[in-house]
Amino acid sequence: MIWIAGTRSFAAEVLGYARESGVEVAGLLEPRELENAGGTIHGLPVAWLDDDAPDGAAALVGTGDVDRREVAERLAAAGFAPRTIVHPAAHLPDSATVGAGSIVAPGVIVGAHTSIGANVVVGRGSLIGHHTRIGNLATLGPGSNVAGNAVVGEGAFLGMAAVVRDHVTVGAGAEVAMGAVVVRDVPRGASVRGVPAR
Image (tube, rainbow, N blue to C red):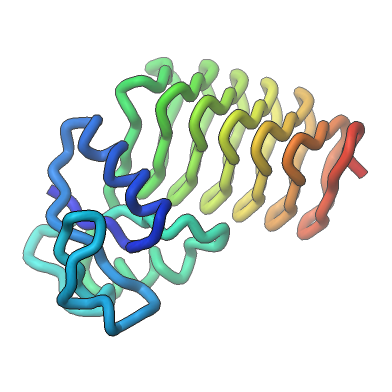
């Protein structure tokens, strides 16, 4: 049984992923609007994120925010263990690894010897090639395609249907716009768009 940190639309999506993965969800944890605590959202009871966790409780960040670091840190401070969800309709080989607190959505295909860090969101239908590294807190929008031997840095964001060529690095905190095609390294913190991405 887990809790989901978040109450907005992405939390409903994560709730579905959890249930489809055979994981029971106890309730939602509100990270922003204290007045929601004590109510019901998406058919589940809502508690305040910073309240002490029940003994042995686990949680998953489901806010949809690109920068999930603060929510993940607050969960840890409250005593929640991180939970990882890999949807049963995703394909990961035995040689791939997924870090704590990450979400791998349905339709995702991951190549051999790829590592996905902690608190990563890999959106529906995304493709990740072999020997690729996805850093902690990165977000891969639905339908994004990262080729083999690539690196997506910590906290980087790939918009829906963005493409990253093989042997390319997207730096930490960089943003790649929806539908962009990355053919050369993207510096740390940069924002790029277009075909090819600039």
